[in-house]
Amino acid sequence: MSNSFEFLKNLSAKINADETKKKSLSQFSGKTFQFKLNENESFYIKFESDGSMIAEKGESGSPAATISASDSLLVDLINGKADPVKSFFMGKLKVSGDLMLAQKLVNEVKKLL
Image 1 (spheres, one colour):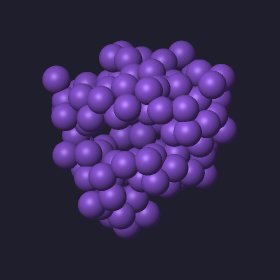
Image 2 (spheres, one colour; image 1 turned 45 degrees about the vertical axis):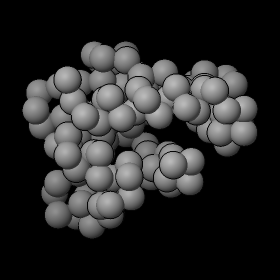
Image 3 (cartoon, helix red, strand yellow; image 1 turned 90 degrees about the vertical axis):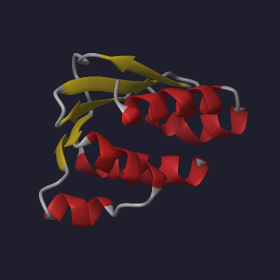
Image 4 (cartoon, one colour; image 1 turned 180 degrees about the horizontal axis):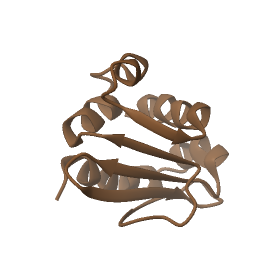
């Protein structure tokens, strides 16, 4: 099991228990973000109308954005230890779909850590 999936699963539990955090993420209501790890693992997070976040294994039908990276890079991006723009231009991070929305999500999640 990937560290990034576990991290996001734990983060979702913290977010879902905090009304203020959920409210700050309600702007992503109805959106799904697919993650494809270089280690051949896939998972996604989706946001409910109240801002609560659900992390699930597997593939999502129609994600707003698909993010591809190594498991370790994804953990570093979420923790703010790696720069998403630099990683993108170095080819370590690939994003398809709504790039701006994916960047907005990273910025919002960093504020909640």
